[in-house]
Length: 226
Image (cartoon, rainbow, N blue to C red; front, side):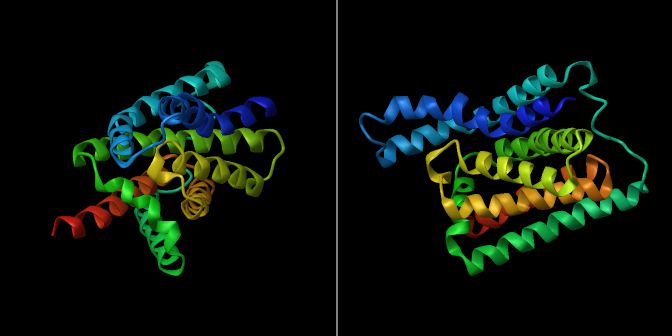
């Protein structure tokens, strides 16, 4: 995987969100503004498209990487025992959740984009978290591995993917474009990259991602339902 392709893989995640999905909403509503009713409709229509975004991201990565698509990322490395891999994935997910909650307490704007989870069916969100845990962590692992293959340090790889992850996670829909959320998601992205580098295995960061996003979702939804 060349350096240029590794860089394209990194920016593919936010670019798919911004230019494949955002522009539709911008063109549709920019001339007449975006009233609350229109914003709600935009977000309702956009939620199922998150799964489409994951499919497009995998396709783009396959095009960039070619036949070695499934060989760059150590999906099932046995460098650590499976119980350690699974336990660390769950544990790191809880740690990331704690970090995000602490950030929200210290800097409330960082928690504002979580209101996006208040709407939409639970089954759809769980499907998004499961599919996203694999696709996003596969993307992150592939990008980090690609940067390292071209002489880049683990720190550089983690920072680049964290920035791209943060931009992608707060773009896309009106309620999520919030500066505080961007910084928080970048930090979470860096943490997930560190989990991959520590474990050298896709399962640990994927499980951490699933635990983190699922727990965040239920912490947002359950109090509102009581």
